[in-house]
Image (cartoon, rainbow, N blue to C red):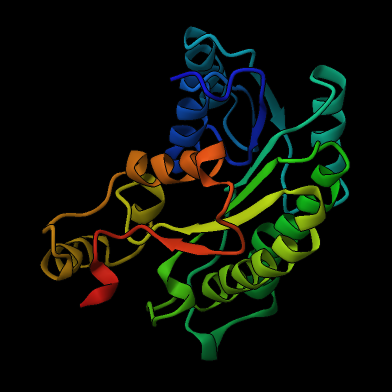
Length: 249
């Protein structure tokens, strides 16, 4: 299905994990995909090659989205290369693991700058390039609504994203721009492996999830891409949980 042919998409943090899965699935549907990254040029080059193999006209943009002075570079390059932007997927995220009572200013600001504030500023700049009927999707996690040890700063920043989603959905409705968030639960990515109790978490997730396993990046990506299509035009301001039923237990 090439229902996104002619569309231009931006995926922040789009060269690894869930972000890369989203970028590839958007390309499979016909979109030209720009991927933002910060650390690994090799990962970016590999992703660009895969996107080209799918017929996309891709572009990689190296910017730390937590450095808000550099954010305009992303949208300037998109404007120069494509002229417009139809889809924004705000996926890039960063944070330090710390209990709430031990949180430092550094841990708080790192999560807020890279996650919540980057989403805020990205939507404002993307809006200037977006025609009517465009799509915006952010990524969140279960740490916004339940306790995850050491996740206080990241969870708070993701909760801010979920709240901003509702406000953006109303304020961009006059342009028929859909704004939603996908909360991915526990997904088997390298990002999850940095948790100090990774294996314990995986075992617990398998035990509590009705399907008896941990989620895969492509399963979250499928939902994100669905929200970027016309089939989802009557969904806006929502947080869709993709966790295999983990949060039901």
